[in-house]
Every structure is written in C-alpha cells, then in structure tokens.
Image 1 (cartoon, one colour):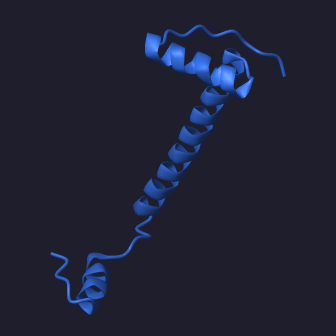
Image 2: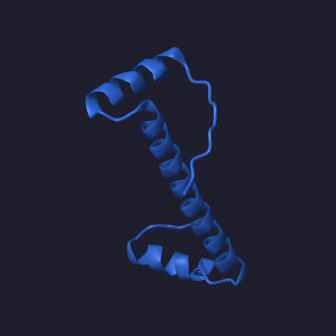
Length: 81
C-alpha cells in the first residue's frame, strides 16, 4: 500500500518528546506518528462499532428491564431507585 503525506502541527513539547522517542527506539518520527494515527483510528473505529451495536440492542429492548435491575440489586440489599 502506498503512503500518503499528511501535515500536522504539534506543540513544541510534543515535538521534542517525539524526537526523543524516535532517538530511543531507533524509529523515524514519521513512522511513530503513522503508528500513533493508525492505533487511534483503529481504536476509535472499534469504539464506535461497539456503541452502535449497543444502541441497536437498546432499540430492540434487549437490556434488563427496570424491574429486573431492582430485583438483582435487592438481592444485595441495595435500593436501585
């Protein structure tokens, strides 16, 4: 897969931290940034998928009823109201 060029602006502190990390790991700043973006996008795509699934389940009324929640909490002596 080819690589696209993306320009970003970061704080001086983040730039310095990135340079130190690149030096310590022996990786390029570019590869570290690409790895970070990939991880961020992958994680957020997964989170959005889970949220979407949970909302769809809620729309289908697949979660515990209020009465069921009260009953479970009551077993532990907790008032769920």
